[in-house]
Length: 167
Image (cartoon, rainbow, N blue to C red):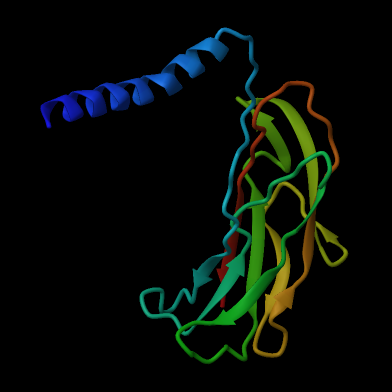
């Protein structure tokens, strides 16, 4: 019985060492790596300012805008939605937006890359600009963000859009 255990232990040890020997034989080659950013695109909601702790409605805004060379136009619709089965307001809710960098994407404060945000025929500028109004009669304002510039440096170029709602 003891001889069987020793043979089994020796076989198991050899079996466990075999993958390590195989990996080390191929590890000496050269290699390159690349990284990919993974993002979850979920929509943010700005709650009713009169009842932020228990809203019956919210205005959803894009949670992120991710441009790529093959996808330079991104949908940035805003929408009035019911929360917890609440009633949508009949009076207009004004939606405004502004850009932290004046609608330029930057990497470390440098290499500005321009983009345009447009709702209807209104192109957003550097100041707080009205996107439009939503209500129970008109719940969506369609918009797009379009990359118009080109980067000269590699890196993650960023900006922040701030949406404000007023009822």
